Image (tube, rainbow, N blue to C red):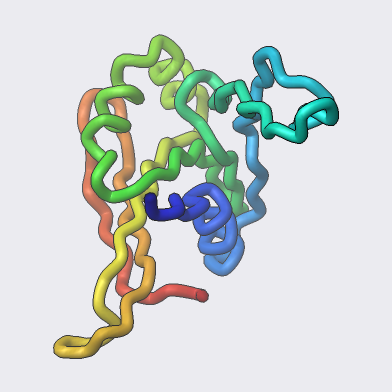
Length: 146
């Protein structure tokens, strides 16, 4: 099984490279986990139990610059439509969007070829801006800070 890349960490790095001040607001909720990840009696690993909880149910990161406050959800490119549906189904979206100069970005990550015909691939972000009642696709240039 392939290791899942840390989309939140990649998004944080990308936002900071764009000049935003950003912080992670999702948190890990532990369920039934113990202090020891392994059982000292038999040396067996215990499963880590828990889940991630987004701020307001749809925000992983809050980013600010001089004029905007942005609630950011980050994921893979294949999960884009599921996350758009999740955001629009959330009861707090209107409160967030109608509360001043705030917006929502869905940052999806896809691996693309660095140059045509080559083998090297890099992760690139695509920003979808979520607005009240509709979405606006705002693809970023193929510039990756890492």
